[in-house]
Amino acid sequence: MNLNPGSRFQKKIPIQPLRAFPAVLLFLHLILSGCAYYHDRTPATRINYEDKVGHEFAMEASGVLRLMDEPEVLDFVKALGHRIGGELDGSRIQYRFFAVRDPVMNAFAVPGGYIYMYAGLLARVGSVDELAGVMAHEIGHVEGNHFIRGQKKLDVTNMAVIAATILAGVLGGGESAAAVGTLAQATQISASLYYSREFEREADRTSIRLAHKAGFYPEGITSMFDTFHAQSRLNASELPPYFSTHPLPVERIYEVQSWIGAIQLPPPGRREIRGFDLARLTARLRTENDDKILEELLAGTGKAPKNAHAQFLLGYFYLKRGDLPLAQVHLEKALRMDGSVNEHALYLARALQLSGQVEEAGDLYEKVLRRDPVRRAVQSSGRVKEAEILLRRVMQREPENSLAEVFYADLKAQTDNWDQALHHYRKALVLAPDSSFAHLSLGMAYGRQGEIGKSYYELGLADKCAGRYLKALYYFNKAVKLLPHKSREAQAAREEIAWLEE
Image 1 (tube, rainbow, N blue to C red):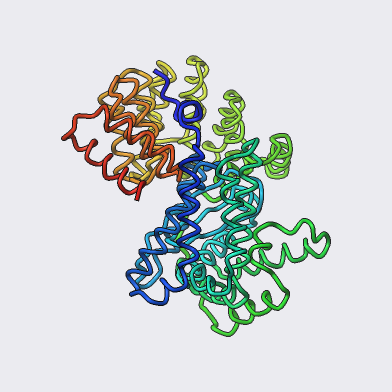
Image 2: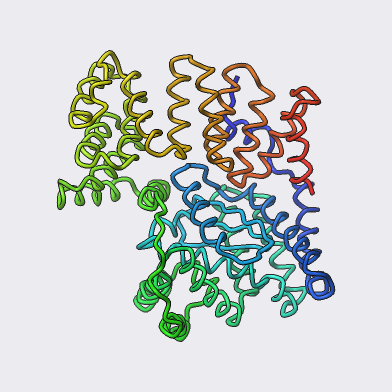
């Protein structure tokens, strides 16, 4: 049975105009009534209203935006967002973070805490501090209620234009890329209307302290401002969309720099957040020309041939491109140069697992593990056994590595050890309940075992975690029809349907 959620969804559940039109009318109605509603209700009611606006937008956007579920990108964006959002004092907003596979440099937030980070932005920022500054700034807009507070400055004509643009994006009207562009334009129009200069200043001030509390240098946001302000001076047409929706006058840069200097923040309590370079490279692989990326990676290894990280990134590139022999060569070099980095072992094991070269795998592991204490336990009987040892090694060092659990479960499934495979898929979800990749992997495993109801349920959770709400709704409805009515999964699926259709 075909359990490819993307292909099946495209064939069986196209976005219907009859569904989209009432949704957009509701969206328009909510916005037009927002000012009075915001000022006349209690804080709890305002939050509920904002969540409905954001939820409706997210439902419609999920049918148009190309939302990513690759763990190297999505899990990193979520980890960064939750790290920063976790520093808020007394916030009642439940933040949700998504990654958009689009090459433009953009990010935006809508009421209710729905924050979208574009791969194009992630691919081109210079440091994790710059990205943290953007994330903290978007959270600042949500916390400041800027979307709703800006409603009093708009008239019906403007909102009708925005609603019509969103409707055109939802209905498609041509190639998917055009639809994505239309919705992005709608977002830019609305953001430029709502986020006045006053609101931008508020979000800037919030981002400085929030990024610092989360362990990042607040100067990251100013370094990004400087880079793209210089770019706009050379060619104004190349100013990234993010700065079209978040205007960047020179005085704003100076203000942020002066605020950082005036409050005299001590160096942040640096806390490691892993995976930035891997997330950035993955984003580039999905938005840029492979040959250009390869040229840069080769230049990096050429300049520093003994740099383990450079070798690892090159090996990862080849792995993602499906060139397993070259991936193995460079990942093996990375592990031999620095065996303390878990990812070096993890992705080498993945390359070996995906390769059919059993005899060569034995030789490679001898080289990889030559200086490793677990060498005595290695048996050169075949590829699967040695990949298993490496994966165990990763999990022993970092038990909360959900991705390693998924890869290990894949390995067990490959050898038809389904009890162990399902155990480790579930363990991955205990470690990372919001992992789209882990839910997808478990769903596919259930499908291969013939448990189709559970498979649909997990695929629904995978799409929900990635922000593909319309597809999630489809899968949950399928799950309810196939699962025993009183089962835990059926009840949970009904609850998910109720939330999505709210």
